[in-house]
Image (cartoon, rainbow, N blue to C red; front, side, top):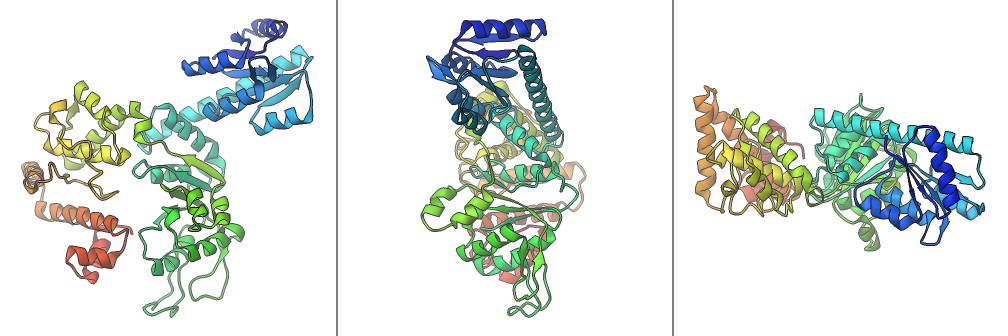
Length: 481
């Protein structure tokens, strides 16, 4: 186990605790002020348990507690003080202290308390590792960076909870993957996981999508239809891009979150909902509230637990792991031999800004799988426009089994498509034309819907096809809008 850290300006207190821990064969380390503790954290060191006095010449134990819990939430902190008062006790527990003890303290009881804190720390540590291992085994979420370990810890803590969660983070950072992980590791794992991008549904259809409608509720409503809340019964409903939800619908959503009841469009019977709601947004909802575009009461209902996903720029140490994973999955999907990224290629990729986050990295790996000339990819094989690859594509438009543009010239993607066709034909694949056609259509339709933010009619017009055609194609290709 890691050492127990003791922070107190009183040398006699440090000495007593050191001797007590020594008798229990527990490693320890002592500090005389909070700043030295923070410097140790900055060097990458971390205790199993932290014991801190409140009043010290070069710092305050409550301030130290808040900083430690903000950056190292799994480290139990025991606060001790010779000045027992209500404010100190309240501040300690509000700041997340494991326990609060007053001086003079009973050594035996203090050691027992430290043991309990150590056990709790080890339990959280193991739980975090198990959650991370399960995620990596199922390729839900990959990440070894401290920022991602914080995400794993949060999912581990929420694994037995039904609490509403708000996931924030830049586009392409993997918010839906986290939502799926929260569902999979929750008591509702046996129920359905239903996802809905509220920005991708036209305003006049979104209410019906969410709550369903009765027969005859409006023109074209020839049958009763169950909405996403009913479809998610007993499970989880993931509402992506919640910040774009129309203001009038926010009121209806607030009621469901408040009392668990809703009505279908055109309905008169109240329906009870047993659904856990997880919402996500790349926007600043506080700013949306200030601008009058988002209900403040709904924000507080959604913001019970906020989980922020780091951008890829904040977890660059994960890029090699993610890149190798995407190279493997891309090759497998194409039926090709996986290509290997050389060390200089990984260094070059790691220096890219990745405005499109993990999604952009995945697109780059697809491109390299198809377009790189050799089995071992060097830095010279990266596309000239690698710094914007994926950012130029419509957000979320996957190049599933296809390629992105290189240098913007049609001949390049046509060459890539020909390479895929050649590989499939040489492998003896049947109905190659049909397979490539469907993948081409899926990529183009997905891109069009992303550009038009889910508006099918506009997407059809811009693609030059009929609205009935785009509806049929979306159903055939299994594109969920």
